[in-house]
Length: 275
Image (cartoon, rainbow, N blue to C red):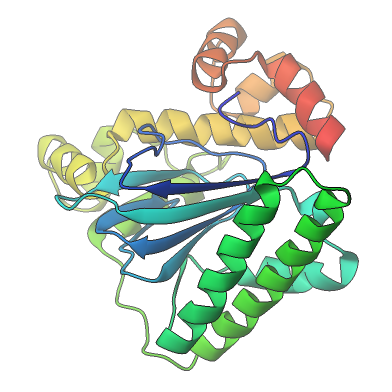
């Protein structure tokens, strides 16, 4: 199920000189930090493209469509931390929620030294087989979240973000209207018209700037909507298919299994167990 199974609720991986990102757009029901030491690539997160620089943190909220978009330079060193929100103590949950309103944090030299130490310490602990390993990992995760939250607050005083690109505006428009009962129908033609472009030109722009084809993005958004409904409701599969933009429940189940490697019913049982 696309690495959904985190038996202990947390997983930490470290990579050096290796590209291991999932190539297709995807989402998962847990939070993710991507700590980038040295890299040059773009990252699509829902309706925004972020461009990590050396010593930065990409933050991917749970149930958010994302995808790595490779540049010419190889990814060098990075650490991925994935964890369920159920691990986080109540007094930190507000800070966690506010932290993940950010897409990326750029670390100062001073912050980088501390975060590098904490990330590598947590990674080392995750590989240990000592008693109370999970208790120590939870403690280190809480410490990391609080330090990153404080960095994010300090970064609010930095420069204002740049204006969204046409592609980012297009994805925002899609997300706002795809599941609206009274909104416009979302097709390649209708979205291209909204931005005064031909379908051909819009499709090329969308693929070039997001790394995802228009059709792939629409399906990913529908699957994400279905996952949210499967996690939070007891609606029958036929209704979830309809509310997720599919007109045929059998086709919905087939597409869902292709993307998530499990059926909608299996996913529902799994995610409700962890939530």
